[in-house]
Length: 385
Length: 151
Image 1 (cartoon, rainbow over the protein chains, first blue to last red):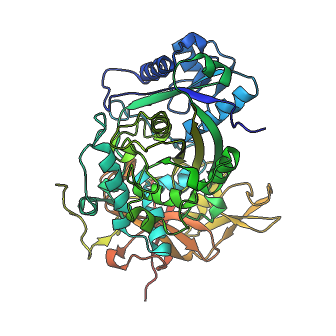
Image 2 (image 1 turned 180 degrees about the vertical axis):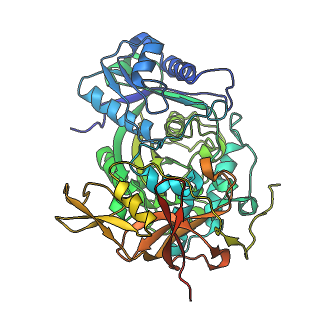
Image 3 (image 1 turned 30 degrees about the vertical axis):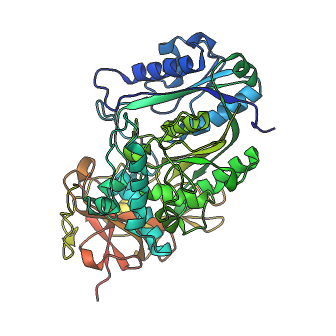
């Protein structure tokens, strides 16, 4: 059994704010839920499957089902950090294909600016005493990956900077984006070092916010007026520290990508647009290599060629400005990756960055850390007419 | 305009007085931390498949073996990757910047997260030969960090 053709994304919503000082996390989850359902032409009473991750407060899916008054027959709270929501869409499609539900709601929200909480890794984690005790920070763990990638493949800071430049060129058209100013390679490499070799402008933004999608069966989609996009393929894979033999130069996309391409039955040449998780510039370079858009080690040269720039680059990416410029709600960028892919397939991206005749899109998430352990998830979505 | 580079002094000497927070110690890892107070670096090795594992644990993730033993290792290795943390230290490390976070590959071929200490910034490089040093904490543990091999 595959999920190809079994489910469609009928509703999508992104919270427009980047700082939300007067609301709770549960409240923002509920707001984006209602927003996505309204986009689909549905209401909370239509929902019979609910999906959320570790950003949901309290008892997670139970607390949020209770808060929103949901009566559902299927729950999933798979937690792989920022990639969770891409996995949720795949799981929702599988649940729909198995007849477990037919209107699946996926929500995410967080307030790291207005109400910062504890980090995801607590002292009870078995790795804590052997990693965090040495002063790990999120940028420095990605910096370890960047340094090693530079060492093995000759990748340069200037090449990494082009990822941010392309994102900023897109973000100038997004009036909700936190950073709308176009930057240059020089701006990036002259910005302060946070953790060598990563500069401030190699790092994603920190914002409040959230988003939601509604995944439905073909029968439900047929009854709705809204343009739904098809879930064609899904793949997910954790990448671990490999029992003490970690390789910092690749991501779990080497496994999740082929699974998604095989299920979708498409090739790289078919991908018109890609949302690529961009917690840091190095995340994008490693991911596009691992997904097979260029040979391993050639990601730096690939991005430096301008390939990521919409609408004319070979692999237009993150046309909302991505995590590097637009938003990164709850320090998790996976939901927004789905949302911009849906916009592209619906033809609703900003006209300046809309990929003409966009038929097939890929969205990829990276949760956890390139420097230790991560959850990778890949979705391939198709325009449905 | 963005800010210009500031704390990038190429001749800086880093980590000679880096603070040493106390790690959480569990029944599973008590023997490891006790050894550090004697100046010994240990890793776990499976009694069945004889593979080394890092981080140390009472389980063999290579073969599923439940019988593992603590073995002392030389504490010599080389830098596999490194970063100077210049901003954003968390918890005990807030304000401790700059310090060096690194993976060191031990001679036994496991790669462990650690700090490189007592090092000239200009000497930092992948492949730099290093050896373990132990920094006492307030608890029953010392942190295994690494310094460049002298001479």
